[in-house]
Image 1 (cartoon, helix red, strand yellow):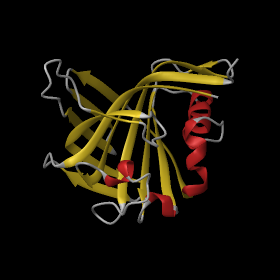
Image 2: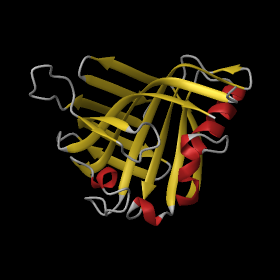
Image 3: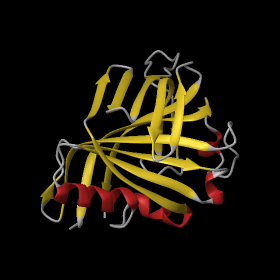
Length: 204
């Protein structure tokens, strides 16, 4: 039996132009702005670690890579829903940093600095082709799906990608992308920046 598991919904925005070259280059390409700033938001619909329920909580991993992600020296910070208890924060922290194994563990060698943990009220709202996430004054981001012109419609997806959340990501454009935490700042509402979303299921 897994030591822990979480499942739910994910979305992110970053400062790269659409489509972000990191994903399609196995993280080796230089980001379109020269550096990478991204906020990976996770809404846990169901989960637990060590008997601690994580149902209904959300967290955001904010990261900054000074050049190509594969070059490392990435700074990461964690924002956790203010509803979380200290036990829940510790559990989410272990999962989000890879300390408890699982998908984020592979990024460990690339991380140069863990900037800390902040607690804020996190809102994660899915409304058709639009997903909006806020975390107090620290994060405000919104994506809209890039839909296919095929008869069945739905978002265009990219498959078999080296992304810690999921190997299949829906493509989206960031209609709002604002970060102000852990020394990472970004603010764009042009609709030209990159976004993704997907369901996720992690365990270890």
